[in-house]
Length: 130
Image (cartoon, one colour):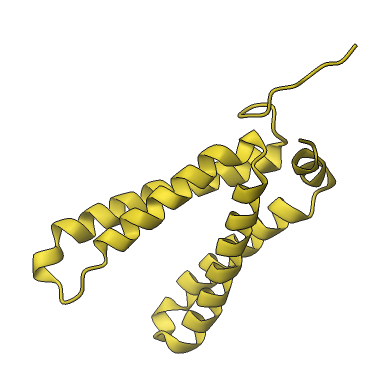
């Protein structure tokens, strides 16, 4: 008997659902932060709200399709996590000392996402299946 399992929320390994949840939370934060940036656009020297909204949409889409077994979402989230880690390291050395904890937290989340997406065997198997 040939059984076909549908991939999605609840059928993905716990680690995939956890990364997707983290990604959706990051998307919500970026969308909220971007909305604040757009609202305050007239009183700041540089406009950054639109960029935050765009990043929020990207993270939202990736977080939504990741549990469905999308290899491209896994790859893009991995690349975004690597970029985030590099930015955190640069930020830790160039930002004021008061921003060191934020940079370390950002680096920690990047490492957690990379490890959870690419290390556990169950996750590798989940994305290996078509």
